[in-house]
Image (cartoon, rainbow, N blue to C red; front, side, top):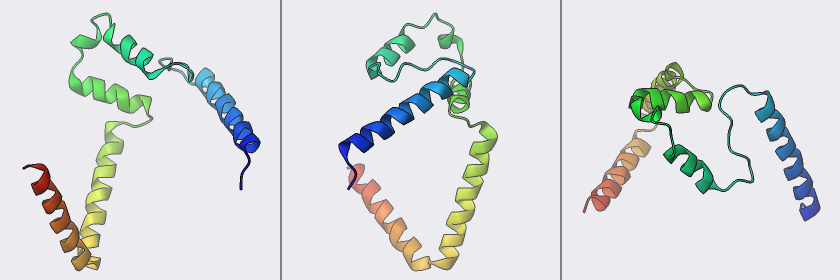
Length: 112
């Protein structure tokens, strides 16, 4: 079993690596790891009006870019998901039918 001291040492190492990565990475500065979540939300609400002029597509593109993705990546992932679901229907039709039934049942219960 891992001791508390080992976990704390690993946590400190990860924090240092994160701080180094933030210093090296270009782009908008992320909030400090010790800052509360509400502080980041408050900063977003106190925008200078520039954010209000952006379209939803631009906002989504910026969020994706901040996480290292772009629209082409999402298109590729969507295509890969569709291919894998198609293969699943061919390989395991019973599992697919049960999954579809379960999904319909849950959605039906949620819509009541």
